[in-house]
Amino acid sequence: MGTETVRALAADEAVERRREQRGWYFYDWACSVYSTSVLTVFLGPYLTSVAEHAADADGFVHPLGIPVRAGSFFAYTVSLSVIVAVVVMPLVGSVADRTGRKKPLLGAAAYVGAAATAAMFFLDGDRYLLGGALLIVANAASSVGTMLYNSYLPQIAPPEERDAVSSRGWAFGYAAGSLVLVANLVLYSAHDSFGLSETAAVRICLASAGLWWGAFTLVPLRRLRDRRSTPARESTAPGLRQLAATVRDMRRHPLTLSFLLAYLIYNDGIQTVISQASVYGSEELGLGQSTLIGAVLLVQVLAVAGALAMGRLARTYGAQRTILGSLVAWTVTLAAGYFLPAGAPVWFFVLAAGIGLVLGGSQALSRSLFSHLVPPGKEAEYFAAYEMSDRGMSWLGPLLFGVTYQLTGSYRSAIISLVAFFVIGFVLLARVPVRRAIGAAGNPVPEKI
Image (cartoon, rainbow, N blue to C red; front, side, top):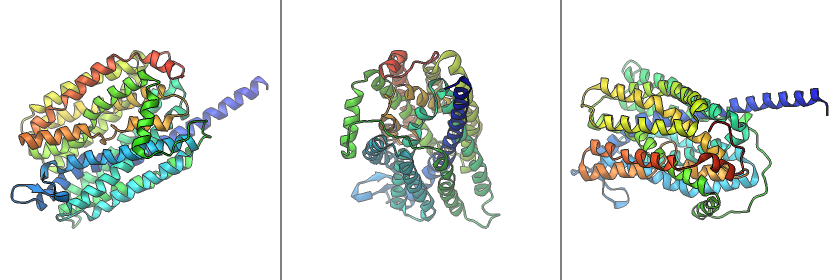
């Protein structure tokens, strides 16, 4: 084969890779609106108000006869959703790797989640159990879909491109979240002008996220390619048994497991801040819904710049050092949040700015760094374990937040309890020799990592 032919084939391959990468970005564009508008902004305060409306004289609801403080119901439901995801994700990941047919599974997860989100339009009155059930389905489906989406990264980007590709994906997601939040803010703030009640406006905002998710999922489903699977062990074990099998396999790569443990801890803290910040702002600081939407919009806008900027920092300092720096910033920001005065939206916006600057980058670089540590042919299976603590699906942080509030009755105590996740995560991540871990996984080691 001549030199010119080789160059032409390489150029064609690069064009196809770029096309597939652009399609991959659009899944973040599609599903991030659920994470932003539903999980972060509207559903926490709204589902809490629905639960409070259904509560008894002592402030408790009784799902399945279990007494739960209405203010803790949302946090407990988020925790339950990840238990469902833990059962489902390892099995789906194993099937995806074994068959090589990730795209149909991605489509199924996306449209189940989108349908559950759209059905939140019917959440009103005292239907807190309906809201909890839809949240569990949507969260678990989002977790499965994002796991499959993440597992494409090592297949569509060579090692030297992954930090940049991962960062662009996050930036696309935050850009979509910003765009839709602007529309939400207009609808919610001017609901009277549209002839809508405040409750109806919130329900429309919730449902529209499901419609957005379903519509834009068509782009990655058209552009992403299924790849022929590599020979791997056959497994159709139930979810928890498959998870145990995945963890046993990870024991052959203890450095990968060490990174995953650090990630699961510090990202648990990140995701809990994301999912509970609006509850903290509304219930503890007494801020209105418009203020909360504006703060989250600020986070989204700055997260786009933060993700791209931290991607560039990683080229100079490496992904691991950049992530460690972001964990220090998270700790300082969260500690400052404990002292925020009630009824002072300016300081809440300052806190939101600090979160936005480190949010996207810390998550994007964690994803790209982990992609180097995954043995070839087991991307979906390993990303199933990775995804357990991603996108607000982590269970220990919301559980700690909910239990702390239930015991103390203070959201300030609940928010400061999350500092432990960032401190412990920093220590564990700093101890991982990532260059040796990449080599041990059987992957080429990038010059900067």
